[in-house]
Image (cartoon, rainbow, N blue to C red; front, side, top):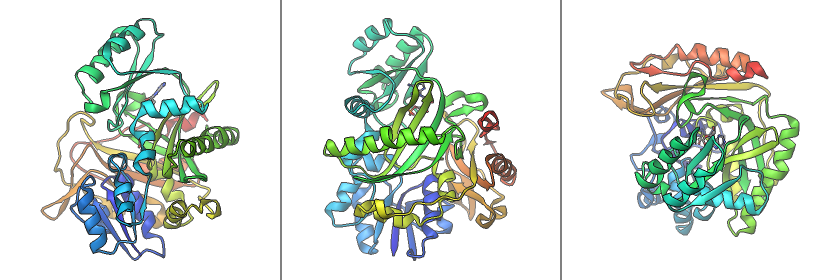
Length: 423
Ligand code: AMP
Ligand code: GLY
């Protein structure tokens, strides 16, 4: 079959590598893709938001299945557009992708269906938000309602910071229309875990767990980023936590979306905080995490394309989801200055040392071709993933492999997976 993947990040590269393993697939296209994806797929220069051009391309090439990796096209309704044209597509429809597209929606859903999450209030004007903050306990969390590249969440330690945050989101519109509404949320503490789940609208199959490192600097300091590294599985996601979440979070969310007339078909990403009062939902995403996909998918041994098809066909209960009993760590190699400002166009070397057969993957994110060379083309440049028999071995392997890659302005965190020493 012919598959089209929509997106251009490390997550889409990881999806492409797993899709390529399926014996059912004989051709992969990626729009727009990147320099790494180009080694296993034919990249076509169509933007992920250009739905008309994507539909025309899928029809022209007789694509059998389109897989949407990114949040923007999903929230923008790409799945509805493809379905209306009779094209087979994997991802939630617009009325379900809202679970990521609006934090006000997702908080309301959790409240209505008793899914554990932090207490909150929603505001549509800055004056009311500031009035509320004057009597609120600090620290407190401000969240722009809409999509903001993972950067629309501000943790404020003082009233002054919180007031400034309201101004940034609602008045200065740093995150654009995403800041039309504001969610103000109780601050929680605990370990964070990400669980990605296959969903067919009725059934849900959670994958192995992962943990992201969202801050730019070592020791979880600095600004929030799209994610600087991950490990899988999380040793803090115990059997008891898993069992609780399967019933009270994952299946409860599936049932809630169905009851709302918004059945969720696709990947539901549940960001959890393991608090002393039990697991609570931090956020939902309507797609694979990036860089969570880069540690979860290399460990998956069952066929990814069959999983997508089972979700679309509503037969996920019959799909046998399997993971290897090992571990994986991904260290993101970024451009120094990310997530604020950074240079681009620097030549990258060292790819030839990576061999997936030995458990080493170099997933491309912001890369491009220039004059026959692969060069840096974004903030997060590469995701270096290594597997190992346990987390410590995987971490050692991943950091060893980060040294194989050279480019000017290379930056990474040195403490990805440090938390596993405390497990
Ligand atoms: P989100 O995009 O909603 O997951 O938020 C990004 C990050 O902000 C999370 O991964 C947490 O580290 C942090 N965060 C979000 N909500 C809260 C909260 N209620 N309490 C503490 N930290 C939070
Ligand atoms: N790594 C977090 C995300 O993909 O949103």
